[in-house]
Image 1 (cartoon, rainbow, N blue to C red):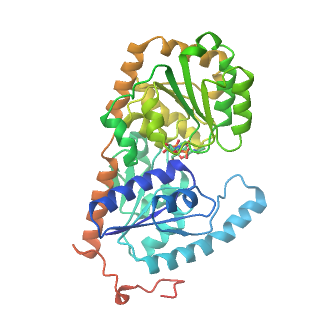
Image 2 (image 1 turned 135 degrees about the horizontal axis):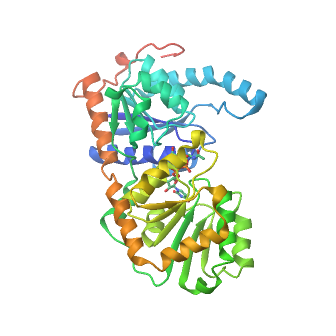
Image 3 (image 1 turned 120 degrees about the horizontal axis):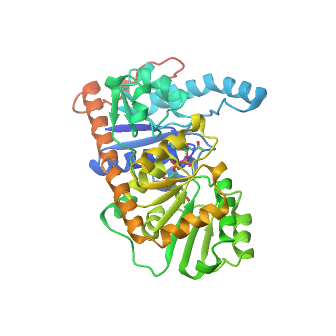
Length: 383
Ligand SMILES: CC(=O)N[C@H]1[C@@H](OP(=O)(O)OP(=O)(O)OC[C@H]2O[C@@H](n3ccc(=O)[nH]c3=O)[C@H](O)[C@@H]2O)O[C@H](CO)[C@@H](O)[C@@H]1O
C-alpha cells in the first residue's frame, strides 16, 4: 500500500500525518508513504529527518493577508492544483489522506478528480472551511471530537481521535519518570505562544517562595526565545528553567512533567490525554471560530484540565492555580486519570486500517498496479 499524506504547515496538522506514516510503514516492508507539503511549513524540516519522501506544492493562505496577499494566493491556487496532478500521476498512491494545512486542499481535490480514494483527518472540534468543503467529496472523514461530526456527512465520519506519534506512546504505558522537583512543561503549540509566554513570566513574580521546589521546561517559539530567556534570568529563575525554542523530544518532556501549561491545539490535547497529563489550558484567542476553546472544553468537562481565556488570565491568577495544583497531588492524580480516559492510543492504527480498506476496495487486494500502464491521464498532467 502506498499512502500519500497531504498537508502540514504546523505541528498540529503534520504530526498526526507522521503518526499515520509510522503505522503504515511498520505494518509491512512493502508499504510506502509520501508527504506533500509546502516549503515554508514545518514538514520541510521534519519529514526528511523522519526519513519519508516529501514533495512540495506552492500554496498559501487566503485569509487576513490583505488585497495583494489574497491576489497572490488566488493566482497560486491553479498552479498548486496542476502541481498536485503531476505529483499524483508520478507517485501513484493507493490512497490520499489530507491532514489540513495549505497543501491539503489542492492535493485532495486533485486526487478525487483522478479517482484515487481520499480521506481527511480533522483534528479540531470545529473544522476549517477547506475541510468542510473536502468533507463533501472524500470517502472518509476522521474526526477527534463529537462537535466536528455535525459539519460532515454522517455516513463518512469515523470518530477515532487524533493519531499520536509512536514515541509518545511510551507515556501511555509508563507513568512519570522519577524526579525530585515539581516539573512544569510549558509550550504554546508547535510555534510557541507569546501571550502564554508573557503570562508565565508575570506569574514568576508570585512564585519566588516555591522557586526551589520547581523545575520548568518552557518552549517559547522562535520569536520569543531571547526575551523569555532574559525574563527568567531577570526574575532569578534562570537556574530552575530550561528555556528552548522547540522541543524535539516531546515524549521525554511529557514524561517528566507533573503539570502541563499550554494552548489548546487539538494534537497537543490528544497527546495530553494519551500521556495522561493534568493541564492548565490557555486557548489561542484568535483561532478560527475560537476552535481551541471548544477543543479545550472537552478536557475541562471531563475533569482532565483547567482552562483560562488569555484575556481573563493574569500572572497572579496563573501563579495561584499553579501553586494550588502543586500542593494538591490528589487533584493532579485525579486530573491525570480523567485525561487518560479520553486518550485514543489506537487512532493511528484505526486510520491505517481504513486506508487498507480503501485501497482494497479501489484497487483490489494487491493494491494499485504501479506499472506504466496504470498511469491515468489527468488534466494538466504530462503523464
Ligand atoms: C494557531 C492555530 O490555529 N493553531 C492550530 C494548529 O496548532 P499547532 O500546530 O500549534 O498544533 P497543536 O497544538 O495541536 O500540536 C502541536 C504539536 O507540536 C508538537 N510540539 C510542540 C512544541 C514543541 O516544542 N515540539 C513539538 O513537537 C506537539 O507535541 C504537538 O504534536 O493546529 C492544531 C491542529 O489542527 C489546531 O488545533 C490549532 O488551533
